[in-house]
Length: 311
Image 1 (cartoon, rainbow, N blue to C red):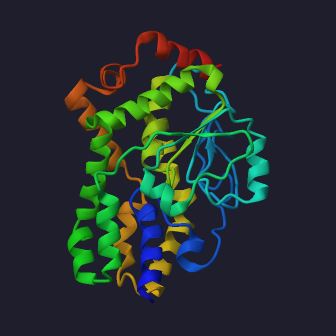
Image 2: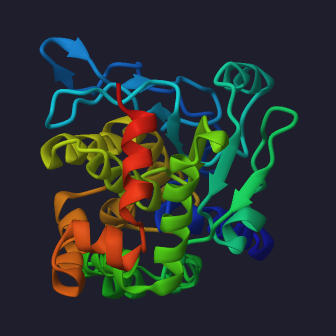
């Protein structure tokens, strides 16, 4: 592969495997087939709770409605959506997205991701609110090591549990980094301000930054931790085929001898979420302290979240 081709491929790979996952056509020349809408959806009393929005250009778009709180109330459908990158949406996808009647779209990607992968492709009249959440420079490091095509360097950086350590560091930064906290807090305030709804937020793969945001929101309105964690882990099912094609494409392109080294970066895991929660416990005495002290959300704002999202 020519040097320019390697740079283009690795540039796409970074946003894929660090804070997202490479779209299949970028890695292997094919469009990913979206999973069945209910393939991995949890059930409550035998009823599906997850409403997966099947699109051609994105695989992890979901309505956060349907979940039950500890008091038996239910999160309303059609108010808050979580997603992966929206830059590859087809015209048919745009038409389907239009039916959601979105008012606000929040993009957690950093500028380098947007430059590499493209701006969101959205229905007319929608503008994006950019709220970049950093990755501790991990993108640039992964870009360099994949572009080297050196299996020894790649294993030294990602093997023997090191990739998992990197991911836990990113999740802890969701709690410790003041800029990250500000971006999550502003998004929660937007959701509480019902004039900004329906609202969709996303990153690249819709799994880490978007996953943490979704966990926070569900817990803030009273959804049990076990249920919120199940929603977080659903990304693995919705992204599995795209992730597999990514690894296959990297191997075929000669960029990685062992692309399975990337699996810990492609997946969400309970211990990643636990790293953020442990940090919140250490810094703020728990999740409620993180919401109120770390994010600065006052009691009226939390009350508005519950009032607007629960029925």
